[in-house]
Amino acid sequence: MKILLLTHSFNSLTQRLFEELSVRGHALSVEFDIADSVTEEAVTMFRPDVVLAPFLKRAIPQSVWSRHLCLIVHPGIVGDRGPSALDWAIQSGAAEWGVTVLQAEAEMDAGPVWASVTFPMRAATKASLYRNEVTEAAVTTVLEALGHVDDWRAGRWQPVRPLADDPAVRGRQLPTLRQADRAIDWARDDTATILARLRAADGFPGVVDCLFGVPCHLFDAHPAPVEAGAQPGELLARRDGAVLRATRDGAVWIGHVKCGDREAALKLPTTVAFAAEVADLPERPADLWRDAADDGAELRYRETGAVGFLSFDFYNGAMATNQCRRLLAAIDFARSRPTRVLVFEGGADFWSNGIHLNCIEASESAADASWANINAMDDVCLAILQLTDRLTVAALRGNAGAGGCFLALAADRVWAREGVILNPHYKNMGNLYGSEYWTYLLPRRVGADGARKLMAERLPLGAPRAAHSGLIDACFGADRAAFELEVVSRAAALASAPDYVGQVAAKQARRAADEAAKPLAAYRDEELTHMRRNFYGFDPSYHGARYHFVMKSPQSWTPRHLAVHREIKR
Image (cartoon, rainbow, N blue to C red; front, side, top):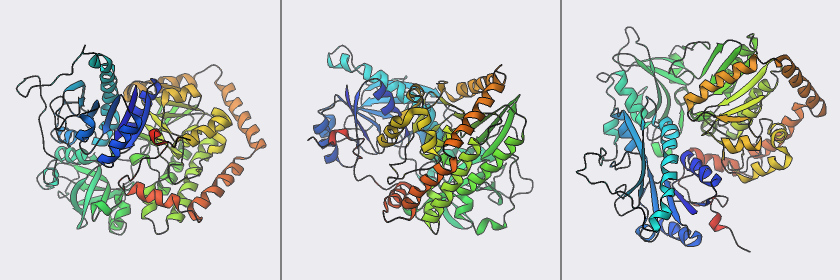
């Protein structure tokens, strides 16, 4: 079918659906929901069989839904209506939630149901649930709904319109969740209540509160044990960009904030936003080697037999200069351990997305901060490439983009969860050239022509297609838990393989031959020559694109590589 994806932005869910529908042979085009007239024009130009809306913030105009089949992906159970569906579910402690595909009508989220799926809720942020459970359920429901289209047109099938008095309909219409509903009373609320409110607002819009007497929005919260003698609301310590705040029955780490006017504010690590204020707080680093815990600490190392596992769970996958340096120190520690295989796990929701654009935007000199950050990323990549005394694995539990993709390629093996989306390109960020040794790493996996094609296309790439193309070595695991179990098994098999010594020797010989042919330093110098022009040159494209990205500026047009219906015909 011809399917027009009508969306507020090309977010993670939209990218996943774009990939899933593309590999199934559908002809796709994308239009950002900018104005009714733009949507009407896109429909007229593309003439789709279906308009699919995975992420909207306003209603589809009647001029479109009354003439064309329009299907809405709603992150709620059957009967649920309203813009804060997932927020309410998390904050109220719902044990189960779901995704429903509805046909667009005059009333939002009230049309006939084409498909629905439910899933058990877990204690997680809205952003994490959206990227995992909601996305997987959306793929299932969209594919089911599209499977009904031909029968619907032929009159052999009809969607269901739930009745309000039907006991099977558990959802209800709820208003927008306001800041008054999210507000935290630090003296009264327990840790579970505070975490639920912060998790329900994570990503957007955050919870309005105060730190150091300054109004701000809070994000990125993790539980901590009881602090003896602490007063509820008291700020106690700092770590990895976060501050520790006491509750009446425990404490929470608050990792990110927005200060001042939310629309003009940057989301930053708390210790960056309040650099002067946190100086008096004691630093309380977490042990690198520790038991699993949702403690908010960014780095963690563990071992299982002859396999070491190093995770680096940076918020939204962004890696600032100081985070790269901490990761380098962790790699040095892992190098000192007598393991045969080292698995780089990245983060639970993102493996890595490269340099930290928000921190760069907040710096005194964005060019200098960009230069320091890309060099720190290169240092991490180089450290992985130089781990030649053992085998290395990049295990992608979550999505990866830009420099994060190429950081993964520095490992000997790259494994990804089946639902992972990769964006192995830089050009969407103001025609950025990129570094992380991509000019060495990418062609050796997909060839020179394949590398040029990937970098130019600027499209998302699903893990199955990435494995088929040779970009990565394998994809497996329907969900994160299954993937993590299989990674442990496969890594152990690598460590105990009869030809392990021969594999390491072959790796060392290949690295030595590559170095003799062209040193890694030469690749880095060539890439950084281009990057210096991006950062310091006369073309401001990167700086403009970065600003609009971090400020989440409203879309003014749809990029032409997505809006194929707007291609100029000659």
